[in-house]
Amino acid sequence: MTSATGREPLTPDDFAEHARRELPADVWDFIAGGAGRERTLAANEAVFETVRLRPRALTGIEEPDTSVEVFGARWAAPLGIAPVAYHSLAHPDGETGTAAAAGRLGLPLVVSTFAGRTLEEVAGAADAPLWLQLYCFRDAGTTFGLARRARDSGYQALVLTVDTPFTGRRLRDLRNGFTLPAHVTPANLTGPAAAGSATPGAHSRLAFDRSLDWSVVARLRDLSGLPVLAKGVLTARDAGAAVAAGVAGIIVSNHGGRQLDGVQASLEALPEVVSAVRGRCPVFLDGGIRSGADVLVALALGARAVFVGRPALYALAAGGSEGVHRMLTLLIAELADTMVLTGHASPGTIDADTVILPGHSRPHTGNTAPHAVPHPMPCTDRSPG
Ligand SMILES: Cc1cc2nc3c(=O)[nH]c(=O)nc-3n(C[C@H](O)[C@H](O)[C@H](O)COP(=O)(O)O)c2cc1C
Ligand SMILES: CCCCCCC(=O)C(=O)O
Image 1 (cartoon, helix red, strand yellow):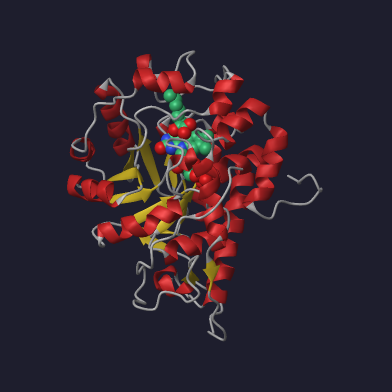
Image 2 (cartoon, rainbow, N blue to C red):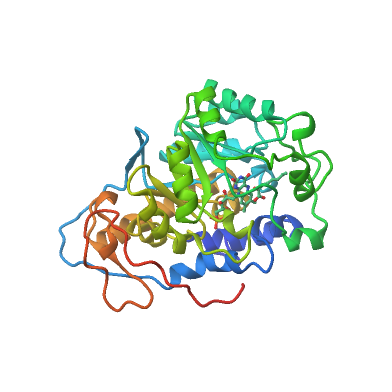
C-alpha cells in the first residue's frame, strides 16, 4: 500500500491516488464521478477550504476522548462509513472487509441496499453498529423484506435515502457506457429489484418507487421496530417534513454530488437544517469529509457525527480491509490532534466559536453552547474539478 511516490498513504487523498492507479478507468469514474457538470461534487470538498479554525493555547488536554453516543451506542469517534453500493467493485474483501475494519475501531457502517454481500454476512463480520440504507422499490415487499432482515440480523437503524427517485445523470458513466462487471451483483436482491444487465441509471428508473411520500417513514419504523433516518435532506422545508414524519435522525447529504447537480454543498446546507430541526433529532452530515479537521468543522456547525463515502472505497481499493482500517485510523488521529489544538477534550464541546466562516473576520459570539448554529454559510466561489 504505497503511493506513486513510494510512501505510505497519510491522508484519504493518498488512498484516492492509489485507487485511481489500481482501478479500471470506468470503475474509477463510477466511484469518483458526480452528476451533470459536477459542480456540487466539487463544492462538497471546496467549501471546507473556506472555513478557518480558531486555536486555543495551554488547555491542559493530554488525550481527548473522541467518542460519541448515538442512539444509545458508543462510537469511538463521530465518524462512520456512508452507504456505498458494491464495495466488491473496489476489492474482493467487499462489505465484509469494510465492516471488519470499522468494527475493529468501534465505528459504524451503513450498508447499502446494493451491497455485494448479504446483510447477514456483513453482520457476522462486524462488532460495531450497522445501519441498513434503503431504496424503496416499486415492489414494496422487497423493501419491507430488507427492513425485516436488518432487524433480525441485529442492524440498529434504517437509513431511508430520500433524494433518489432515480440516480442522477452521471455523464462519466453515460460516456463510458458503464455496466457492472459480471462478478459484482446485489447480494440482497432478487427478481426485478436486482439490477440484471441494465446500467445502474436505467435500472433505477425501472425499479425505484417514485410515488413515495413521507408516510413511508412510519411504515418502515412500525414494521421493523427500528429507528429510521432520512438521508438526503438539504433544506429547512424537508427537515421539517422529515421530523413531522417521525424520523429518528437526519443526514444532510447531496449524495456526494451524484444526484441534483447545482445544489449546495452539504456543509453549506447544514446550518439551515440544524436550525430547522431545533434539537428534535440528531443531525448528521456526509459529503466532502477528507480530514479530521473536516470532521471537527462539521461538528462545529451542528452535526452530531459525519460519514465518509468515497474515502472508504478508495482505501478498500488500495489495501482491502487493512486499507480501510488504516484510513479510518488516520482520520481519528487527525481529529484527536485537531481537538487538542482547538481546546476540546471531547466532541460535545466543539461549538460554533471553534470556526470562522467565509466573509466573517470574527467568529460567531452569540451562543457558545455545543452545536450552536452559526451564521449561514455564504455561497462559495468555485469551479468544477
Ligand atoms: C460509488 C458510490 C455509491 C453510492 N451508493 C449509495 C447507495 O447505495 N445508497 C446511498 O444512499 N448513497 C450512496 N452513495 C452516496 C453516499 O452514501 C454518500 O452520500 C456520499 O458518497 C458522501 O460523499 P463523499 O463520497 O464525498 O464522502 C454512493 C456514493 C458513491 C460514491
Ligand atoms: C440501480 C443501482 C443503483 C446503485 C445506486 C448506488 C448509488 O446510490 C449511487 O450513488 O451510485
